[in-house]
View: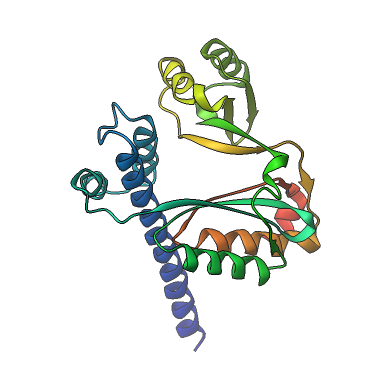
Amino acid sequence: MAGHSKFKNIMYRKGAQDKKRATLFSKLSREITVAARAGLPDPAMNARLRSAVMAARKEGLPKDNIERSINKAAGGDADNYEEIRYEGFGPGGVALIVETLTDNRNRTATNVRLGFSKNGGNLGAPGSVSHGFDRMGLVSYPATAGDAEKVFEAALEAGAEDVESNEDGHSIWTTPDALHEVAKALEPVLGEPEGIKLAWRPQTEVTVDEADAGLLLKLIDTLEDDDDVQTVWGNYNVPDDVMEKLG
């Protein structure tokens, strides 16, 4: 009986992982299509598309899927996706920005609102939290790209605004307009980045205690599991000891 239960648990976990992977692939394909439709369907000539393709390759999206997503946009038969931003508050007063790509704004608005309300949060009005963030470009590198000094010098030379380095990797911040120029200048020194994107950088952070952290992470997971949600940004800081307790 115990063995049977263990088998079912493994199958459940595998199913959950497969679902998350399918959701991720759907989001990546959607971003590629939107990026290709917004500019030229050639990654070499379209910075947003180049970033989307790079992110897709990093996550293992098959080449055929990438080409199919680009061809959809080029052929004019792609779904008409809208970029809609939602803002709200999570447990502990954390500010959250939810970026979506959707072909049905009513469905997306309902799902995002429910995600907030069922997990200790509140959906706010447009602009209710974004004033506490700076819109910036973000180039991400793994820790293996070099030590903090090497990355800082490369970023300074490339025209970046700021650099954050820790054991997990390096975050290089730029102005929005300079994002792709800086990323291109960094490649000869640091190699291909893990990610290039426009981001929301919080001006201040809210440290979340154990009582709120579990519910906050559940809220973020709920939002990120939605096919229409591309990215969730927040001003939260969960201390390492709290993360360890939460597992």
